[in-house]
Length: 96
Length: 210
Image (cartoon, rainbow over the protein chains, first blue to last red):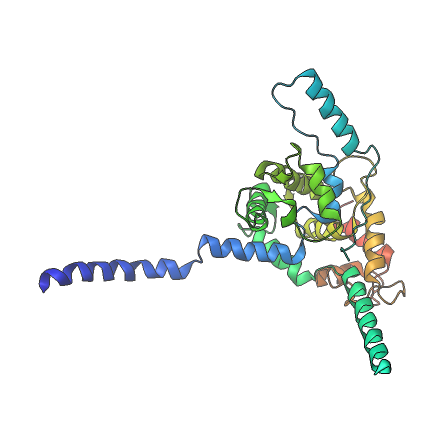
């Protein structure tokens, strides 16, 4: 009986000992969830809404380490298509 | 019966118009903005530095990556017309999804744009303007890739028009609910408990030291 009680007691003490720290601070996932909720409440679009669109149009794509001439030309074409020269004024409306 | 149907149709149309108007004027209130700011400001020093911002970025990525495949797919984004356009611009390798890196680059650029005084941290006033400009847009007139005090009027005019629901040219405290109450009092230079566009712009410029 004594032999069975010792591990049980030890486990109980370990569990009880860990309780204060667990109760004192919320877990990382709980903190992350609360941060995500707070951010989404003020900014539902994680890409930054209309400001994000303006900023995104100015981001230059990182160059790959080595590209063929054909790929480089294609990339330049794509970049010219997607990066307008004039400032973008976005006019977002919720989708009907 | 026909009369009832017509009546219901009218009520539905009216509700739709009200919802559309409410959506148009939707800016978060100052308490929500303050709560988000405090949640990001882990150190509690009333400023968000880049490390704290990056933590927010990681959390937003995780939250948007609904199927947990390590990417944000276009289908994961909210139903606005604007998000797909931004998505295409940020998806540099054109694989139809955003990696952590691609998302991180955009979020860092947002931080940089909002850091009006260029001190590598966001104060509550800068964060508040970031939230407003996410909704109403911003024109980078001098292509500096940062919001400048001189560019405030144009974007704030748009915000003002959205907020001034009764179109009387003045924002009441209820209409300017996104603005910190202490800032409202400071910006209200003639003490008439309302803000004109000039007071709003001048108040921000003064607060930003411009």
